[in-house]
Length: 73
Image 1 (cartoon, one colour):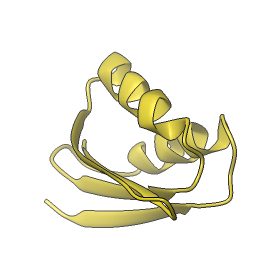
Image 2 (cartoon, rainbow, N blue to C red):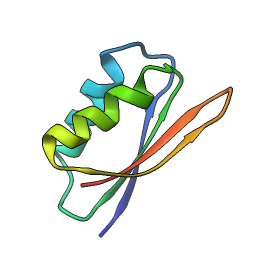
Image 3 (cartoon, rainbow, N blue to C red):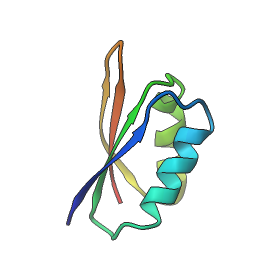
């Protein structure tokens, strides 16, 4: 199991979801992807995408400057 980071800051929907999808395709089951975003829509969009595609959202950190979503592949 490895951990990876994806910087999706300053990107608007649907780009954070698309970049997350593209990065997860390169990872192995059990890997962790931490996605940093600034678009508030990702709080709903990325977890919905994860549910549809069988990935697990471990944590969501939502601060005024940045949203960080940790996903297990």
